[in-house]
Length: 330
Image (tube, rainbow, N blue to C red; front, side, top):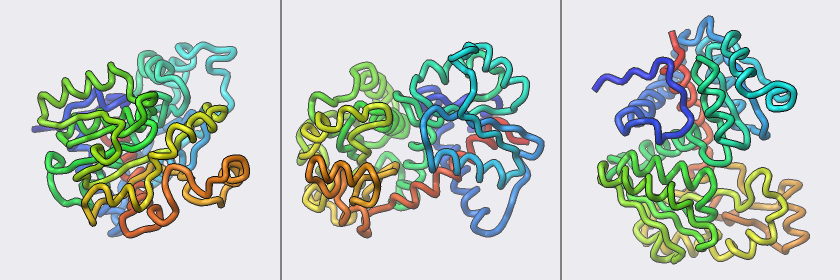
């Protein structure tokens, strides 16, 4: 089936069909092969792209910039605008749409990304909001496809941890679209919002996906081909460390939890950054205040043969390149 995404924004995978998502992943795999073979492109030549960041970033910024540069695009990185302060989001979007061919937004509220897309007149790509992280999950599903080498409908993914954060939401929606078995494993206090679960289950009824939510770790990860986790405290929630540690300590992905999958070849995924050791300023404070040498994942699992976290990180660049080429490319 032909896929044409010209002029489309990417705010959430809820807006895309299974065929469109699959096509983007396959396109990214092809772009990755070409880059590794030294085959360049000029698909973004003459295109101007702006990256707006309210939240800090390593992978998202670098992936967008390198992907654009690889295809001849030009990039502006913006963190100090008047958007929402002295100028409305609507007015800012209308201005930037006159200057740029595509806009990436990474920030707090999903509504900001939606308003940008409504008024800019050019594609807007969600680089992360509190609700969704679509560019990340495209890379995650690409990584699963590369490593498991079978159709998505024959995969089972377990997300363990804070299941109501942007990664839990996005993985559930993406799994439902692509037909995976997906289980959110979390304490009841951190179950995903009912409207997200309802949307995913409605989609699953059409695609054959299996969607579940449970607080039972053994039940949730049993038979999983991959276990995914994310940080226990998202950006902007730093005051909640004590609360989240108390809730999520039993949900730490360690060797014992991985063994509960019953699958000796189960993969481990994480969107990064990860608190797997004490080699960061924040981790040192956590170790001092709470006596933890790691949080959501143990260091041995993070560094094990099961871990594909750096493949995921690389695939951010390839999937983002696919998104930009598909929506604003020559």
